[in-house]
Image 1 (spheres, one colour):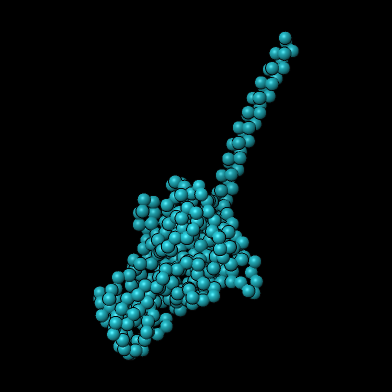
Image 2 (cartoon, one colour):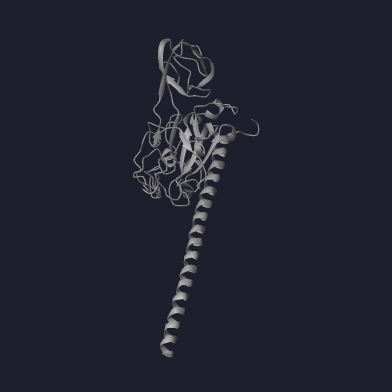
Length: 321
C-alpha cells in the first residue's frame, strides 16, 4: 500500500512539473512572438523613415518627387524588368512602361483659351483645382500647371495657350499609387519590403512628380484635394498630403509579397473597414475603386495593423524656402 501511495504521489508531482513547464513555455512563446512582432514593426518604421528622408533628398535635388514603381515586378532585377524604377510619364505616372499600379482617371473641366494668353476664362468649375495642378488640353502646352485661381470661373496658367478655343476640354490628374521606387531613390532593394516581407506602398499626388513640380506648388499649399488622411473615428488629419507610405502590417491584407506578383494577399480574419479603405480592396483582396483617401490610426484599435506615414508640401521644403 505504501509503495502504491509513493507511485501515485510521484505521478502527481510529475503532472505538476509538466504543468509548470507547459505554463512557463507558453508564456515564453507569447513573449517570443511579441518580441518578433515588435522587431518587425521597428524594422518597418526604420525603413519608412529612411524612405521619407530619401524623398526629401530627391525633392531637393530635382524639385520634384518620383512616381510610384510597379509593385508586381520581380525583386530579382534583370535588364528586362523595372523593379524599383519610377513609372514613366512624370506628371501622370501612367500610360507608359513601367506604369503605376493604381491611378485616378483624369477629371475634366471646360474653359475658353486665347492664343498667347495665360488666362482661361469661362471655367465650368474650379472645384478641386489648386495652384500647381497639372492640366492638359487642346492648345495647352505639355507640362502646364495652374499658376493661380482668379475666381470661380477663371484661372491663370504658368504657360500661355497656343490656340484659341471656346469651351475647350481640359484634363487634370490627381493621385497614383504603387510601391516605393527604391532604384530611383537610390535605396537598397530590401527597402522595398516591410518587416513582414511585403512591398511598402507609395501613393503620390502626381502634380508633385511633374518636371519641377515642387516649384509649382508653394510650401504654404493649402489645397484640400490632394491625399486625404483620417484617423480613428474618421477624425481629419490632412486633406493636403502630397505623398503617403503604407505597410499592410502583420496581417498583410491587400499587400504584394516580396517576390512580386499580380495576386494580392488576402487575410480573411481581417474585415476592418479602415484596412479595406487603405488597400482599396474587399475582404477577398479583390480591387475596388482606387481613391485618394487613407486611414492612419493606432494598431491597438480593432484588427487594424496598417502602418501609415505621409508628408505635405511643407514637409518637403528646403531651408531657403
